[in-house]
Length: 228
Ligand SMILES: Nc1ncnc2c1ncn2[C@@H]1O[C@H](COP(=O)(O)OP(=O)(O)O)[C@@H](O)[C@H]1O
Ligand SMILES: Cc1ncc(COP(=O)(O)OP(=O)(O)O)c(N)n1
Image 1 (cartoon, protein in one colour):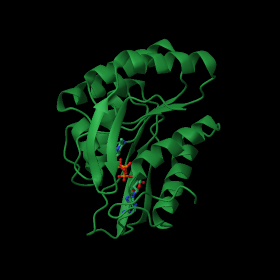
Image 2: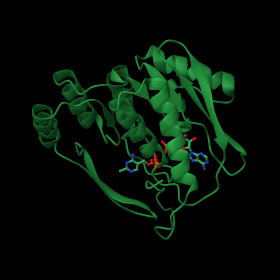
Image 3: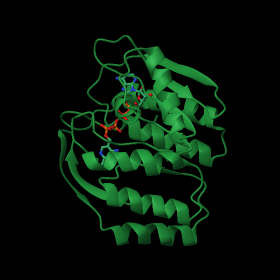
Image 4: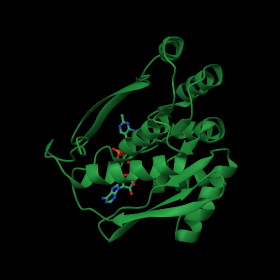
C-alpha cells in the first residue's frame, strides 16, 4: 500500500515535471490506511518539500506504522532535484530521528552528514554522524561510476556492529530504481519478520540480481528487473 506524496511525469529519458499533492490529501491517506490495516513496516521516498515532510512526520507520530525505512531522496542520478533545497534540513532534523533504517546514496550521505566521503574512514564517520542525528541503522550506498571495478555499501547497525556489502560494478543503462528497490526490499524483509542485518543483506542481493539480469525496457535509462 502507498501514500502518494507527489506525482511525476517521467519516462526513460528522465523526469520532466512533478507536482506535490495537497497536504490534507496526504494526511487523509495515512488516516484511512492506519484505520484499516495492521501496518508492519513502512518506507518513505520522494517527499518534495518541507510541508510534505512535516505532514509525513506528523502521521508517524500519530499512528503506529511499524519500523520506518527512510530513503532520503534528494536528487536523482539524472540530476533532477526531488527535494527542495530548503527542505533537506527538515528531513535531517525531523524525519531522520524516526528512521529505523536510513539508506542514503553516496551523494545524499555527504549532504546529510555535511562532509566529504573521500575514503572508507570518512564513510564510517559519516554513518556515525547520521546515527547521532537519531537514525538507528545506517546503510551508505557506495559510489558506482564507470571508473570502478567494485562497489561497496557500508552498514552501521544500531548496536555498533558494522560491515561492508561488496559487489562488482555492473555497467548498464538499465539502472532506474536501484535505490527505490533496495529500500522497498528492506521494508518488505522487515515486514516478513527478518532482523535488520538480514533484511539489508537480502535486499541488497535482490537489488543486485535485478540490476544484472537486465530487461530491455525504454529507450534510454531503463528500469531494473523486478521479476528476478
Ligand atoms: N552500476 C552498479 N553496479 C553495482 N551496484 C550498483 C550499481 N548501481 C547501483 N548499485 C547498487 O544498488 C543499490 C542502490 O544504490 P544506489 O543506486 O546508489 O541508490 P540510489 O538510487 O538511491 O542512488 C546499492 O546496493 C548499490 O551499490
Ligand atoms: C518519483 C521518483 N523518481 C525517482 C526516484 C529516485 O531516483 P534515483 O535517486 O535516481 O534512484 P533510483 O531509485 O532510480 O535508483 C524516486 N525515489 N522517486
